[in-house]
Image (cartoon, rainbow, N blue to C red):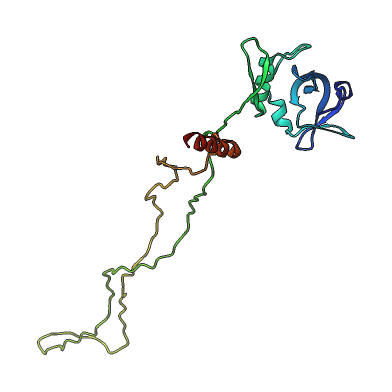
Length: 241
């Protein structure tokens, strides 16, 4: 970024998510070439740092390639008027930037560190509703049949001849006799009685569950310069001859 530090002061800072994070209240230069390297962004009562190397100055202010959550979650550094090499290294590691190699006296050299990163898995658990079970009581009608022994009365006419030895006298005239006939009938009586208690309750079943995903891991390998390697082989062949 070739913009002067004074031009950035007070600029509105917009994150990669399109949200306005705050305004630039302080700019820190690189100790080697003096170019603006870091900007302290004021958001309310909070101040956080953003790298200026990949940021762009637009008509609306300063646009940074990091979202609001990333910036506001950064290290809370009290740099005063000058940012130390250790503070710059801490911020560079947080933003995934290359970290310069430092000499014992704290001066930065042209060599740089490559930061190798990898993803780690964190397995948690959450409670989900998988379904609902409901008890409902219905009334079913079931026909029943049961044999009951009963009786009923019928009548018979009984006639007995009168012999000459029997002395029965009487006058001729009308007469009558009446009897009452009976019968038994089955009588049904119903009553309601409780037979069992039914309710729903949960039962906890322990089991093992396996989650599947993929983790990314950076790998750093040495890639020699091909032209140098070919030239080195040529020199060795000449020496042998």
